[in-house]
Image (cartoon, helix red, strand yellow):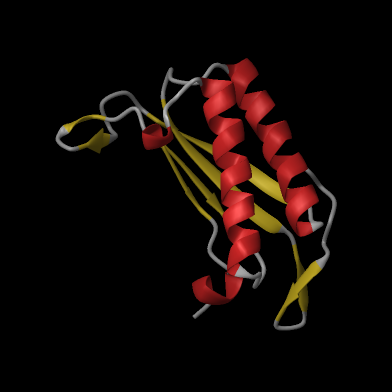
Amino acid sequence: MSGQGYNHSFDGYSIMMVCYCLVQAGQISPEDMRRLETGIENIVEKHLASGVNLSWVVIPGGDGWKAGEPSTTSLVLLTTPDIEQDARVDLLGAIRDLWTEVTGCTVDEVMITAPPLSALAA
């Protein structure tokens, strides 16, 4: 986890972006998790000029389902400041490209969302 980059503020408080990565148990190796973490930290620094606190949530086998079957889908949730939609699309695309490159999954096996903090605080 990056411990730098408290460059954004919300309601007068300095904040760091937060990222949760939910993955199915046994789907992503520890080495690939480290590659993804470093890659996401670099992407957030490049696109948001901020650090990120990244946490992994490993879903036990059989506990994650999609379309009535055990899921192979991962979820990435990254909070952002209020940014233009074009910048958000670029950020989402960079994470998608990283995730599919590192894991070998298809674009249908990763859901990435990057809501602004202002939407979450409402």
